[in-house]
Image (cartoon, rainbow, N blue to C red; front, side):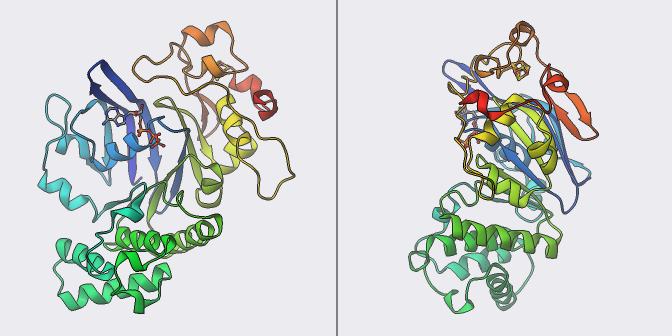
Length: 338
Ligand code: ATP
Ligand code: SF4
């Protein structure tokens, strides 16, 4: 096992109280595996990613849980007694980027506009590894080949790149140190579908070649369908369903997953009306009692309003946090959301 997140609780302190951004989230990842993390905006996906890479902002408090990466308990290394992260941790800094790297949301804009792109990649390598400038440059060139940017563009500035090229350059940067885990937060949302497909295909090839594990975070289920072997669906700070990509798509066992899948057009399937899950995701300052999805769930029953559903195992590794998962599996239809 490369990564094990157990019952991670991260809350943000704000003027009016606490935002319960992740409340007892557990995920696991093997070496070389890809996990898709999906859910609507503001359900806690980025908080989970930052909780793993320990990049949480200063008003975040880790109230519980463990993050074990490659046998090391990261939280033990970096957490102060009050649950906040230390501002700087030398040990963790070695792990970050070298072993766990991130492709951030809107990463294309993260390139320094006044520095040549190739130099930015070489600099990241020089910062972490004992190599000469020439070796770092050679590695940057190899990475350009890997992500499919012509090497003669290496000395250009970011404004001379298209959006897709900038995104590829950021992927090259994330891969520069051969990390064991890459966390990609909405890596392709800003791109058109054709460029998005090209990049996702490239990422998959690279992953096989480099044996990296990957967490792809997105609200777009078609992205994870193409890239992930397993999926964790998040709703309002918690995992609602987790399983293989096939199980999530074909043996759906949670009403929220069903609504989410129905709200995206199928590229291959027949044309159908799209579902919309009525209402908005709840406030995480005072999340709903019981099942957090109950105010929006067409299948809601009384018990849902008061009791938090336990994880029901549908088959080994396929777990649904719905009281009625066993009854509903096979009968769920996105049509009820239309
Ligand atoms: P998106 O897809 O929009 O990025 P997300 O699923 O990644 O959303 P998060 O960004 O993790 O969700 O946010 C979870 C909740 O925490 C949201 O209610 C968000 O407003 C809140 N939040 C995020 N960062 C902070 C912060 N620094 N202080 C207070 N609240 C925050
Ligand atoms: Fe819907 Fe109840 Fe299942 Fe929650 S527990 S998803 S409210 S049926």
